[in-house]
Length: 259
Length: 369
Image (cartoon, helix red, strand yellow):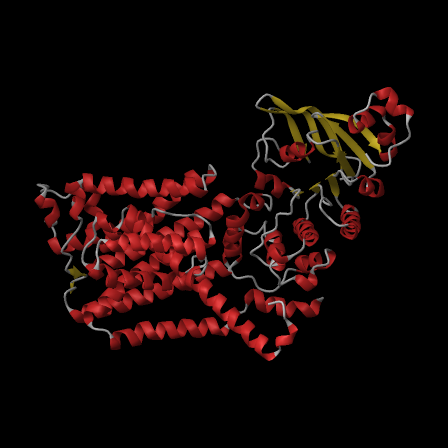
């Protein structure tokens, strides 16, 4: 598949919760190999969009096509098996299992069920590689519950890596991290995205400026703007929703240092 | 990097020798020590406790590892017990005759659904497979619909209540409230013979050992980790590409099979199976024993079943009515103050001793504690 082909295509998507339109007609196309940032104020529908793609939320209408398969209506684990992986805003690793066991479980998801009943022998090389990539080799036999917040997030990224998804959806991967942890996570994500298609939901503007190529801005359940970081930052409509100012005043001022 | 892996591998696959030694020691105590030391009466009581321990291993798997609070394990125990009991009654009645409990209710001809239970080749496997089939059907319905937590617990308890109502209501078929009583022989062996009872004890102990090893293999496999993962984050497991409903279904079904097996052994040991042994309260008692022992430990569950039932026998002889209150209080206390039960207490003690020893060796290192 060439990089220009559309891997994920969202069209005419609507999600209504009790009359509230969380997503109000979103069309989005992500090409293979792309690193796409998804930003927008709180309640813009970013996480809901991820939830719909991964099967957690059923849309009211619309379709999500991934590499030729319709994802709407499939159950979560089926979607994962097609090659769509995600992380959550709060790291969700299995705290009573060790780091290694977490990774091993993630790596075994395509095994036939009966083979899971055998005791594991040795370490999968993919697991060893992932341990190294996320820098947790020294913590392999510690239970995941005692890791720091940042390390848990890295473990989660490692769990995605061993699953080798074609599309990675990261929901605020640097939220709640220290400055140093953010830098490490950034490096990690950059390395991961070299060979994969990634969609990142992120609020952190420094992070965005450093790593983003294409940005999609969402607002009130719609796509407001799509373009490069500078295009988006200079867009009056985007500045208005972020700053809550009227359009004419916002354009008169300089580019905001922090959205 | 690679240098770290052998240690990791040992942790993943190695069996700690202490575990094997403890298993061997327990086997020795149960298979040699107890038959030598105990009277016929005590040994047959112990056989009964071991039957409950088999149920406990299943509950530990289901609840301790899988997080499914099953309040209806008595149903599966009962299905196994009634399947076995029915066969034994039919065997005693002889071909062409109906068992005593049926003729008391005026049933002269063996109902068609009980016909297959004349054959031990049907009845004995059915004692295990029937509970598993019921659990699998129930599990397939509820786990797919994401019924869990308290809702699952209530559902399983309702099942236990319904099962008892069914048994009591169908007196001609099931012996009603009295159940199947006066069971005296098993495969032509006289169950009143002390020698046969002792042999039966050994069978129960060996089955418990086998059940324990099966459960241990399950919890040490990848499946066992997956089960813990489902317990701690069912939704997260979905996003790893596993179907949690399948994972839970397997544990629930296996635990039902274990309960059924225990029921089938219980009947020849005790000589009776009745609704009083498998309703809501006995189901809760199974669970309390596991909580006391430590639900996330198979050995703890076995220990809990032995300790609680031993205490029950001793204490209910002296104040019969007080026992249920005591047991209820025990359950609340364990859940509140020691959720890991006796095994958790043992671990805490061991760690405290280690701390004390290292503190004694180098007290100045850790003044904060």
